[in-house]
Amino acid sequence: MPDIIKLLPDSLANQIAAGEVVQRPSSAVKELLENAVDAGATYIKLIVKDAGKALIQVIDNGKGMSETDARMSLERHATSKLSKSEDLFSIKTLGFRGEALASMAAVSQMEIKTRLPENDLGSLLIIEASEVKKQEPTATDVGTSICIKNLFYNVPARRNFLKSNGVEMKHIVDEFQRVAMANSEIGFSLYQNDIETYNLPAGKLSQRIVHLFGKNYQQQLVACSESIDHIQIHGYVGKPDFARKTRGEQFFFVNNRFIKSNYLNHAISNAFQGLIEEGSFPFYVLFITIDPKHIDINVHPTKTEIKFDDERTTYAVVRAAVKQALATHHITPALDFSADINLGKQIASSRETIKDKNYSQFKNTTSPREQSNLENWDRLFDENKGKISIDQLEEKDEQPLTLTFGSQINNKSEEPLEGSTAIIQLHNKYIIAQVKSGMMILDQQAAHERILYEKYLLLLEQKSGASQQSLFPQALSLNPSDFALVMEMEADIKALGFIIEPFGKTDVLIKGLPADLGAGNEKDIFEGLLDQFKKNVELSLPKKENLARSIAKRTSLKSGSKLNEEEMSRLIDQLFGCENVNYAPDGRSTFHILEMNTIENYFN
Image (cartoon, rainbow, N blue to C red; front, side, top):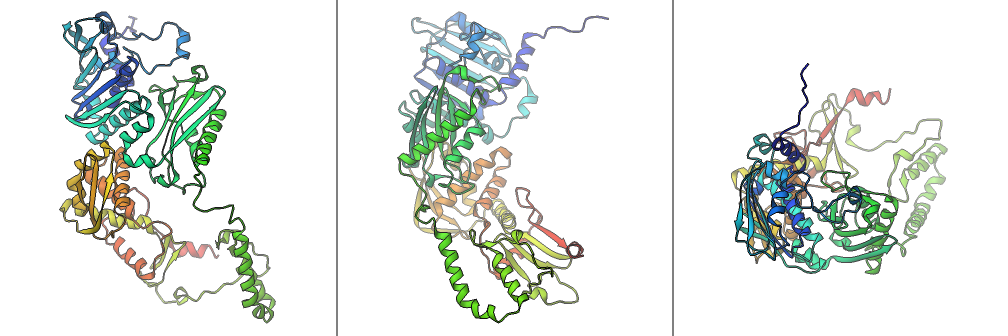
């Protein structure tokens, strides 16, 4: 039998490696930016066209490479940072020339220009699909310029799996922000389709945060610093008042390398407990400095996940550092819980006094059975929460407890009709209505999202959204990335009924809202729309569908909203006028039918 195992050609091996290293354009951006940082650059320029599919270029003024190093950087496993196995456990740099260049060169058309400070001429290399087409001396600035054109041009299957330009550009901006945040002492700029999106001067971390995310972040930064044993923490957290409903700007860096850690994120959430409402997310940029021997950065190919040898200590230090920062800046909950600690007892005492006055004569004249019912009614109320807690009721009487409610539900008819006026609201969250087959339980928030989604989708298609002019227009400061996104969607945003116009370099003036939203909260509504749109980007939805989903999610009725009978009836009618009545835009059920035979089974 002939031998069948053989070595792969280098070009094919590089393409396979590219599948791990270069998953999308943002992967190449990350590698090139980190290489530029490690090269000692004081200024780095990123140029992107067609969301990185047509062009990714990174220009730095670092130390550059010699002619030989430039050629060697394209070889597999070539590096200037590692020489022995022990070096793997003391890595303090981000990347190294040659770590990913070979993989990127295998799936693109690459051009490298580089020059050392002591040389008069630099080197030019042109590579296509791992093959060096040209290498010659050239006049160029000190540092390195790497240009990647037509990414995945020779691997069409990979190119077809790329998302829309909006999605890919979001990933590129995310990588740019992370590297820029971790290196505030370096100047950065980003050009998207020849338009300057960011121009970040070198400076302090607080200045970098404001330049990246907007002037409104200036008011919310709380300095955070802690040092214990081999762990040092510094950075900023946001004031609780600025917490958002979507998980936005949250950054952890370990030894200046961006990481993702649900475990440490929980430590932050724990520190903010009692200061922000449930479902809100605080802003934070925290840097952890730790001896490399106490962490393992090689547990994930992209190095965004690391392993600590003592996770519990790290968790405790992060939590303590954030709590200390909030306490030092006198940030406390709006309600002083220590002053009102006996509030529940006072309410309970007042209730007992009222009960004694109102019910004493009644209780004295009732039968033992009626007195027992009254006691059960009292026990239905949880004094600590002030609401009914039926689950905690335990029937102690031998006879079953009978409670009669004066309601239209008890008026029996020969055949229950759909659309009956027997409509009630349960816990300000669900709407219960009588239908032919039994009882309908409707989720008011999910139903309203479906109604608004179809309404706004129609407005976007017809470009017919009615507007309500604001008496006092509100200015909203955006970061450059968000401003560019708003300007890109300006026509569709106006089709919904918003009246907006640019106001300065990265500000937007909101002059009006869709007619049915009401004036006064223009800024909150527009910010919510933008946050939700960015959150939905990962779903790869068409732009109009994403916008309709986003505004429906942000402006719909929320659980806890009290409705009168007319409002509940109108909500039901509008839902059943929709094309898809069964599901909210995100797939949640809008209602369920509890059929009569199911209900009857509970009593048999």
